Image 1 (cartoon, rainbow, N blue to C red):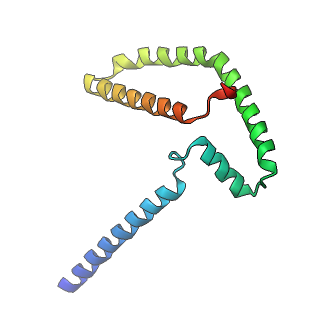
Image 2: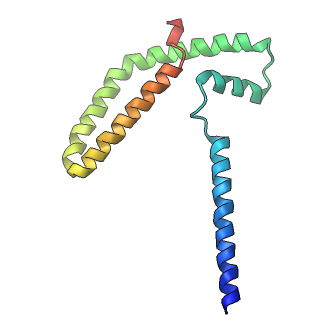
Amino acid sequence: MERPKQQALAFLLGALLVGGVLGFSADRVFRQEDLTPAQRRAQFYEDIGITTQQRPVLDSLLDDRNCRMDSVVKGIQPALDSIKAASRVQMDPLLTPEQHARLEARRKDDQARHAAERKRQKPPCGK
């Protein structure tokens, strides 16, 4: 009876180890957060087979698109911020002090992450 238990334990341990290795590998393959926008664009070009002659034209088109999208978002950003602030006013009284502290810590982390991402990106519209 001892042998089947050892085999089962060895199998479970092996499955755990293999799962961990696969999870770590998949995270490295699929995670795009560590790439700068320029690196993501270069990877995109590589994936679809863009030639060196096509790159400057596509860069120009994508930069123009991004500038136009930024100008649209800039116009509605105050409304989005207002909606977010109103929902926070409604949410906060529902939370315990501990939950509120966790939420605030999460909000600060998100703000720091977004600020870091903005620094990594090329300024919009050549500014």
